[in-house]
Image (cartoon, rainbow, N blue to C red; front, side, top):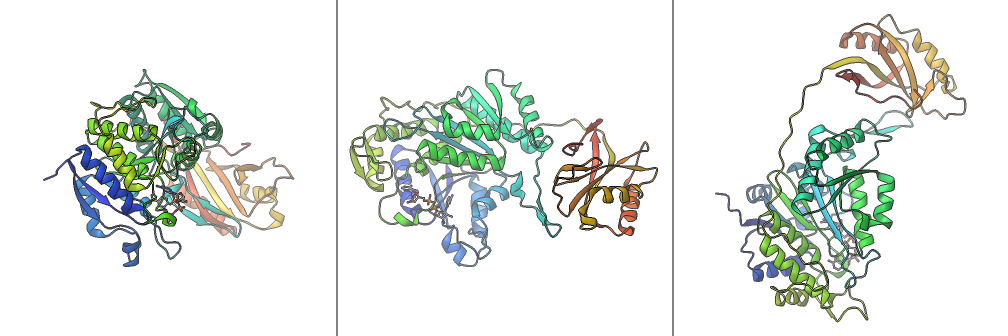
Length: 481
Ligand code: NAD
């Protein structure tokens, strides 16, 4: 039977075992009342021949317990090894990466004393599907896949998180001025879901200006929700500018399983020296206790940790002469926290999540929209006639019948036919857009058009069907179309 107090732990590599021992000691002394199943991950498992760094038996234990507290591991370089984090996230459907980033000034140096933001990053989609193809001598592509349920889940999670933690604002960051379909979907769903949370302010920033704000005015941000790649980048910027890379924890949340870890790596340079700061993993454990409903003990530990920072008891990574009182190792730092259990910080904001419910999100249902075939983009590898788009365009126009017209040709997204500019550089990769001219077309019409194109000597490298949904274009226009 499932025991809600039983969690999976992995001691990891490098400083992993030291910081895990320190954290378990604190959890134990605080009365977290947890039971543990320990699994092996990382270097030893990679060395035994596993490509993923995690054994088959360990998967079953993680699935059974639901909550997984993981110390950092050392990822071997080269040799075809897969990132264990990516494998775990995707295999277990851990759709949300949650990373609170906070400054603890004046006790820990930071450029931004009021910074207190949470980045909620979509974890499964976007360019991280890793679907890449080389198509011509000059051009490779990568597919960015965004799904409506994927957007909805992460955005709803962000608002539920804001509500649960009493946060006031959720900022969505996308690049939908360029990617109107993919990022546009994320932004549109954000606007829809925001209406269900009228007490929370909702705004949107284009990711480039958003990243700049993370870097130089982070205290204006509260909760940020964004797509996978942008979230990956801004969470590292945020941790760096907060001055707390060694302090931050993060969670990877799925419907049934969640994984909690420090944001730093295995720090092999200081491993085994009793120097590592266990705060990152401790903060991850505090997030876990909160999600498990053990909010009181989560607050007790957080407050004792904040008191320790306030009292100037610091590990080497945050120790500063004139600011810190005592430089301690991993074990002594953990003992300092234990001796402050029950105390509340005086200057830093105490934790007050007691009674908070664990975050649950409901799945959406979607209206079925009428999908209609409108045409096809045929991509060609073409390197003839000095790559003159007019030559290509006029040749293709002769292949159209009463079924299709050649709407345009683009090169790297920019329209070059009809009426292109002589100055535009063209690669050997051409998108030729054919739209239907009769009321309805089917796959066979597309195939017969492609047959004519191939018979005329062209090298088709891929095609994309063009659809409308309830009359709205499901494809973007070429730049300049
Ligand atoms: P790192 O985070 O391990 O270390 C960067 C620097 O920060 C080092 O100088 C280190 O001593 C210091 N540092 C990190 N954590 C600290 C702590 N808790 N206390 C005090 N100082 C700390 O990053 P890296 O050196 O780039 O990576 C080392 C290994 O960790 C690599 O194999 C990498 O693949 C792996 N890694 C694992 C994870 C993970 O398991 N989630 C994340 C990042 C990196």
